[in-house]
Amino acid sequence: MNDRLELDAYLARIGREGRLAPDVATLAALLNAHVRAIPFEAIDPLLGRPVSLDLSVIQDKLVARRRGGYCFEQNLLFKAVLEQIGYAVVGLAGHVRWNAPPGAPLGPRTHMFLKVATAEGPYLVDVGFGGCLIDAPLRFATGIEQRTALGTFLLLQSEGLYELRANQPNGWRSLYVFTSEPQLLADYMLGNCFASTSPLSPFTRHLTMERIVGDRRCRIVNRRLVTEARDGERAVEREIGDAASLAKAMRIHFGMEPPAPPEEILARIAGRSKPPLGVTLRT
Image (cartoon, rainbow, N blue to C red; front, side, top):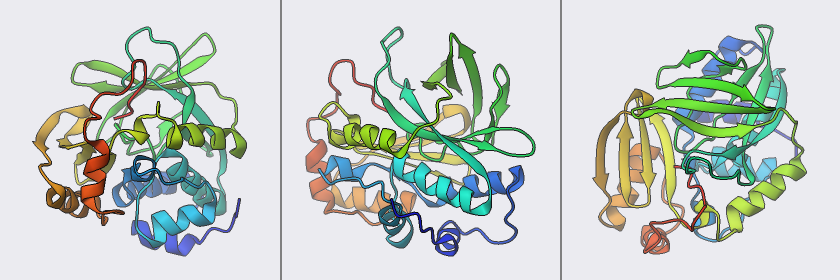
């Protein structure tokens, strides 16, 4: 993996200027700017395109070409940024539970996120969970509700597993469960291969995008454009009727040009509104 990070280009991409230090204030500012500038999107798997975890490729896609990416791309880039600033960062992996039925067995570890050490203690940091983007670092402490500008989160621990939950209109909803075992790049390569190529992966079947804009989360799920207020309160939802509307939504709400003809993107999701039995759709 090419470990050369172009920090100035990244900072320009997210619109971040000023002081950089390995502290909580800088961490919070960088995370907030990142999720507002770089959208979550998993269009490449939908189109059958490979997803590289090489840092130079990720930078070209998310920074130079102003695309978005999904969890592995987003959090590998953010990890490199934090390490260059001077943070101690551990990569973790989670079993996604966002849309899993109650009592369903754990699926593969297909979500990447970070544990970041600071003088004020460790923080859970995640710039790549499509479905409920986390807009602030969360203290790595269990049993306490943590309120951010756009949500309320809760980290629990039971029988050796951590679980991250988000408060939603119908109550607490699990994002993912995980252990504190550090992950290698090889571990992420396996998860990335499944997420980007398997017919059981939601990303090879569904169009999923999300970005924080102002005091709202904007999300596309297939042909639905959804805007949410804090804690998942539904504000606006409308149907994306045609290719021109999809391209317009990408430009206005996600700050990016369609990476393929929008007609091709819509054709890929035609007739794919339901995932296979037992598969978790992370949106």
